[in-house]
Length: 72
Image (cartoon, rainbow, N blue to C red; front, side, top):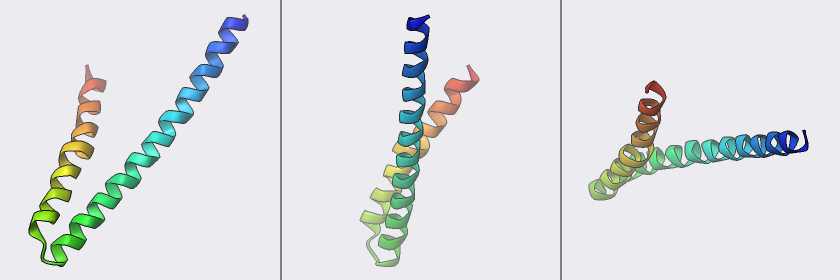
């Protein structure tokens, strides 16, 4: 029973860590969108595109990858 309680505590810690990571990812995605918008308005198309590409490949791409994994 002690092992079960220990594993339950471990599970709870992992759930909290994942929630924290998810919150961080949302903040990073929001910052990337803000930077893309800023650079576009500032007339810096290369930097705007870099922010957009990073958002699409790292943020949206990972979300879609996770969604595909959940469907399997």
